[in-house]
Image (cartoon, rainbow, N blue to C red; front, side, top):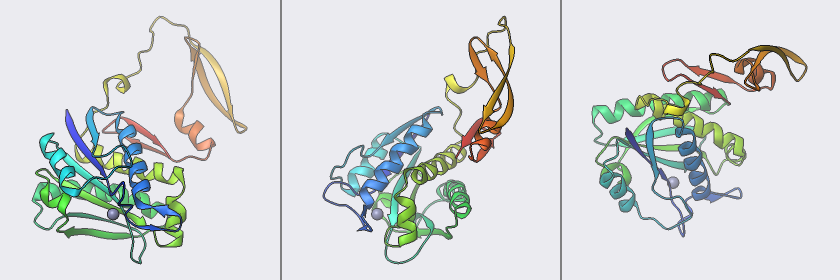
Length: 243
Ligand SMILES: [Zn+2]
C-alpha cells in the first residue's frame, strides 16, 4: 500500500502569509484535511504532518516522512508577494522520478485552476528545506496568492478549497497509481432481488432509474449535471468526481 505524507504549511505561531482576512496556515490545513479525506477512497495510507494548529519546524516534517518511509511527500502552501495563479516546486536537484510525479500532480491541478480562470505559473525548482530533507519524491504546491483580492476571495470559499483538494487527490492517485479502496471497488448487488422502474425528478428533469432492495439507483451524471455540478470520470481508477 502506498504511503503519502501531506504537509500543511506553517501552523501555530507561524501563520504563513496573512492578509485579506485569511491566514495561510488555516487554508493549508483545511486543504490537507480535505485531500486526506478524499484519498480515503483509495488504497493508501495518508498521514498529515500536522492535523492541528500547532508549531512545527521544517525538519520534523521531513523527518516524519523519512521515518514512515513514505512513497511521496506533498507540501501544501498558499503564495504571496504579488501575482496570481498556481505553481509547483521540486527540489533543485530532484531526480527523474520526482520530476515525473510532480508533472502528473501539477498538470491535474493546473487543469483545475485553468478551468476556474487562474493561470499556470509553471513547474519550478527550489532549495526548500522540506524538499531537500525528504528522502522520497516530493512536491510543494503554491495555491493562488493570498494577497491578491480575487485569489483570496476564492480561497475563502470552502467549496473552492474542496475543488483544490479533489484536484490534488486526483493528481496523487494518478501519479502513484493508487487503487480504489476495497469497499468502493464494487457495489454488491443482490442477484436475486427484484428491480422496479422509478422516475427521479431532479430540478424538473426527468431521470429514469430503478429501485432494488429498497434503494433507488439512477445515473449519477444525469443527477449531478441537473444540479449544476461537473462530472469527471477516471476510467483507470474507476472513480467518478463530482465538483
Ligand atoms: Zn507558505
